[in-house]
Amino acid sequence: MMYDPKPEHKFTFGLWTVGNIGRDPFGEPVRAALSPVEIARLLAEVGAWGVNLHDNDLVPIDATPAERDRIVHDFKAALEETGLVVPMATTNLFSDPAFKDGAFTANDARVRAYALQKTMRAIDLGVELGATTYVFWGGREGVESDATKSAPDSIKRFREAINFLSAYVRDQGYDLRFALEPKPNEPRGDIYFATVGAMLGFISTLDHPEMVGVNPEMAHEHMAGLNFLHAVAQAWEAGKLFHIDLNDQVLGRYDQDLRFGSQNIKSAFFLVKFLEDVGYNGSRHFDAHAYRTEDVEGVKDFARGCMRNYLILKEKAARYNADAEIQALLAEITADDGATASYQGPYSRERAAALKAASFDRAALGARGYAYERLDQLTVELLLGVR
Ligand code: DIG
Ligand code: MN
Ligand code: MN
Image (tube, rainbow, N blue to C red; front, top):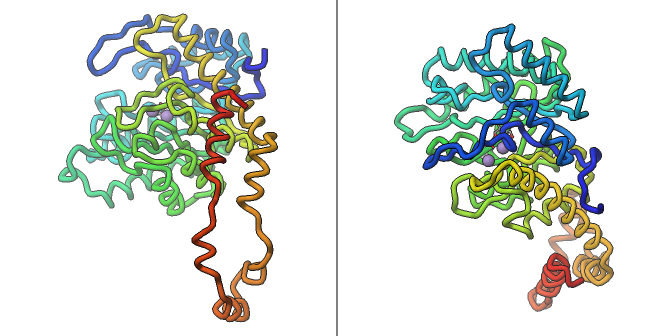
């Protein structure tokens, strides 16, 4: 079938996504917990290519080294059985009460040290399972009150941690890149490095910026009221789009982690079109979960829906690129008669002098109609399936 997921689509889900048991701040779990092996089999059944994990999604935080080895052994067997790969791994630095004040930016130096230890061990686990991307989502790296932490000190602490762990990865000779994932708030009142832009600015201050990129999440930029495509495009243009978390979100709500393509069809379309147009070759990772109302069959519907919506929008993007009327209109809008060619390009004294002497018909520039209404209507009609 046209919208059936295939390995080359590189669709991945975290163990925590289809394994979500439906607990929320106002309700108890509604689904039985699935083991990592059962989750791997479910993902294989719906057609995913890969499975990602936090350390404790697989190995309980209080597991003994022997228990850890057995759990990893059994999970590796499930990967072998299903053919799933593990492209990305990460650390849970937000669930255990020890991290209630953060991990790398916690005020307690023992918590900061423990977070580094836990992350090194989780990196070892991720590499053992084949991960080449390591995500850092600082879910508790923030404050409810700025009386509690110095913002510049917190930034320095986070930098020291990432520098230390970058050096660890290099020292171990691991083939691993870091992807920093921003979120503006929740579960903390405010989280440091709230957006993709803030993370990109931070990366440039690191010892080894070349091994650190970003993992933008659609719901998180939307929570900040931002345009997700613009954030992703800036990361891509800077060579820093190392991973991506796809889902959906209604503006002005808590982090809903909704099925991809279930809310903002137009922004999902432009995002998919961008990734396909530029030839993004990374995982299409769905960091989302089913509605609390669903049983395990509903969870499978959720996972299938994420992948189907991506493939449907990918086909729409191909139609858009092949639509003669749309492409003709775009060519008309972006046409350049070459009149300003001598002014374009790097600075030179001659170029600046010629440009300063040039004359422009400002009235004509202001009178021009851009036909954007027609272009956007054609776009909407393509998405609504009437062209
Ligand atoms: C939340 O959006 C975070 C956690 O789910 C995980 O640490 C990261 C990886 O996708 N996203
Ligand atoms: Mn999220
Ligand atoms: Mn995420």
